[in-house]
Length: 177
Image 1 (spheres, rainbow, N blue to C red):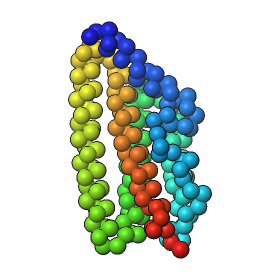
Image 2 (spheres, rainbow, N blue to C red; image 1 turned 90 degrees about the horizontal axis):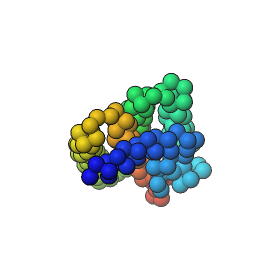
Image 3 (cartoon, one colour; image 1 turned 30 degrees about the vertical axis):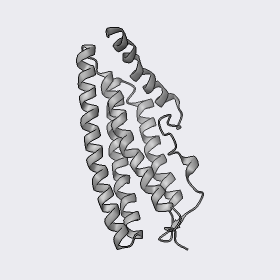
C-alpha cells in the first residue's frame, strides 16, 4: 500500500510540469479545445467566437504568465489554480447569460434547471475532491503539493462548463441569421 502511494506522490508533480510545458495547450482539455471553435459566429451583432477565444486566451495567458514569473512555487501553483477557477467562473456567468437571452421560455427554464444542477454537481465534486485530498494527505503523511493536484481538478470543472455553454450557444438553430 505504501509503495502505491509513493508512486502516486509523483503524479501531481508530473501533471504540474505538463501544464507548464504545454505552452498554451492544456493536456487536460480533451475534446473541449479551440480547434472545435468555428471561425466566426455572429450573435447579437457581435462575433461571439472571436470574443470567446479572446476571453479564454486572456485567462490562460494570465495564469501562464503568473506561473512563469511570480508563482513558480507550490504555493504559486495553488494561487494560480484559484485564479484560474475564479476567472472561468466569471465566464460561466457571461456565457450562461448570452445563451439564456437566445432561448425561448421553455429553453430558458431548461437552461436554468441545468445550471442549477451543474452547480450542485460541481459542489458535490469539490466535496469529493476535498475528501480525496484529505485522505491522500493523511496516507502520505503531509505534503502541500496535493493542493496543486486537486486544485487543478476543481478549476477544470468550471473551465469545462464555460466550453459547454459556448458550444450550446453556437449550436445550429441558435445562431442569428
